[in-house]
Image (cartoon, rainbow, N blue to C red; front, side):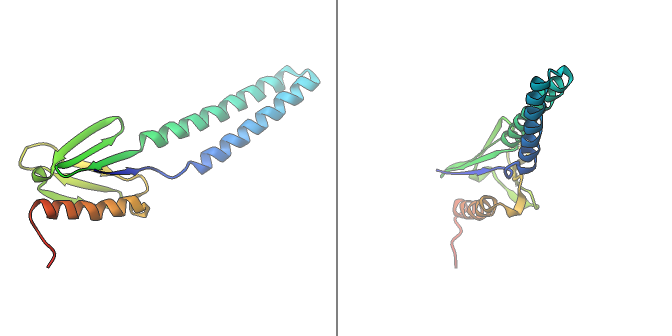
Length: 147
């Protein structure tokens, strides 16, 4: 069984903004405590909480955008956004691809097509490798051989 995990890049911008908010909040809290200025303490706490909230939201979005694809001899399983879909190789009747997704048509069974979404698109080496392996698996299932 092969497993591919397609995720977005590290949330660098959100992490930097979060760190700056936390730093500014911590400085305002310390200055506010030193000068007994309640307003500075409140503003510092608010900035600190906003920084932490931004970091948590960025982490949650990264996890939610994650797509996990498992391939085995019999079929494919795709987990994304908390939902899982699966198909056997013989049920897949067509494959299309755009810059960020691979669509697997299942016309025989009347089921909707499967979508493999890559947050980084064609820049993700896992996505490129998955495309190659998918075509090899489908060709093997249909009995095709290299000439």
